[in-house]
Length: 78
Image (cartoon, rainbow, N blue to C red; front, side):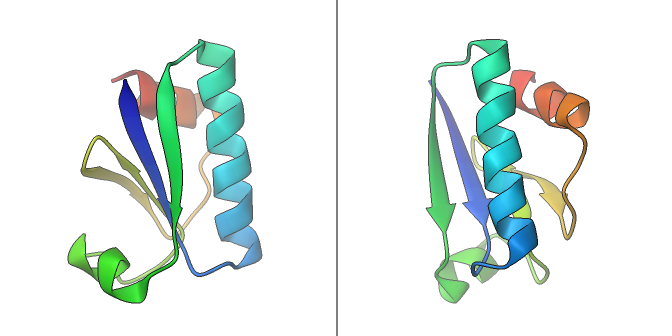
């Protein structure tokens, strides 16, 4: 099972990344756990200084933007 983390403090882009990531995972039929991380210390522990960010299985994939649905699918299926 994949572990997906959305890093962000609650801005509109953070919510959009979470929404789009859930949609991508559903379309791929992925068995995954999606967590929203809002704790600044946890976010910076990944080396992320700009949100939103997408972390898949402990690896930061996207920082500071919301990628297209197709790009998200690519990241989630790697």
